[in-house]
Length: 438
Image 1 (tube, rainbow, N blue to C red):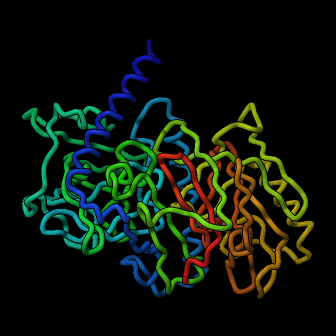
Image 2: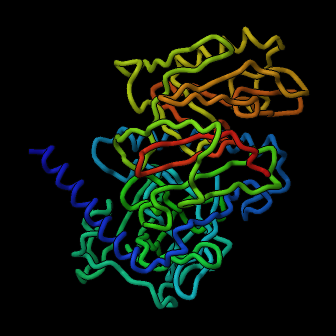
Image 3: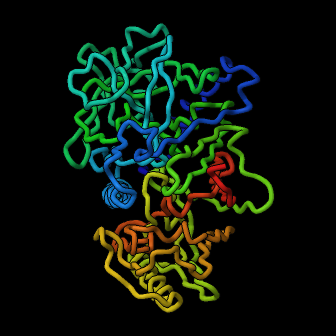
């Protein structure tokens, strides 16, 4: 009986999402199906409102690594929850920001891109309690296209954390995070504009007027690019066609912006592309991949998760753009560490920043053996910059950490200088080695 209810609920939510897409299809022009490209701004780059010029590159890296640990803990807490409960997640620790606008006339907004969350949210007036942001707050009363969602609507019944207002008219939402911070406001729709020409009507989002969140990026909220039904990717309809991709510039090159591509521009094709399926698991906003093992030179290290009953478990690692380092099960990490210690004939040193585990003394880049991540159907060969980072002028460290009982994550350093494409219709993630700064 319980399984039947879950299936019926899934069908109901998919039906509501389909109706929303049909209404958007009528409003989008044929030319908009070409897709579009937006800049991805790293939160520590000079283009970011949170950029601190007093920090050294190694200090910025150390801060990003610490944010990664915090974010991974909360992603794991949400993943292991048996029923949807928002109090186990925190969204403030993403790494990349995206410019867009809300309303008519358009009001500029800057949101952290989150590939592990679905619905987008932003701060709104009247701001009864808000965190500091550099841009003006969005005022719903100033937008001719803004609409609230009725409490008896299918959307209100489908989005987690929603409830009716005292008047039984508007649909409210409330999310409380693990650190007791929270966001509260109205479930709403409005026109979202990307760049100067691409406008999408009736995008469902959360308009927050009470936001007690530690949000150090200088942004206005979150842009949800997860795999669920209310993800921005789903809501873009024919404009995105269920596809998006990004090309992350290495952290050492902060003079260039990374790129985020949607729709036809988000396709990853041509010579050198490898693709792997992502697996449907709870929560469906996460992109679960299957990692078979890692090669160091000619040595193959098989994946083994000590918390799992099967070494070949499907969907055993999450790919996430908001976590900097790659997180591996302790058993696999230990094998990788020993293989690199044997292969790299350099003196070891403790990480001067006290974050990473395996570091070598060298003022130059490390010439590491070939390292390949073997995903199901896709062998991704990494360069030295994908696996090692400099944490001081004398130390280069392995950008991988053991996670113990937490869930493994394929992080953004490993993804840099790759065009990484997501196809929600084919349910695949693709990789193509690319110079993302060009």
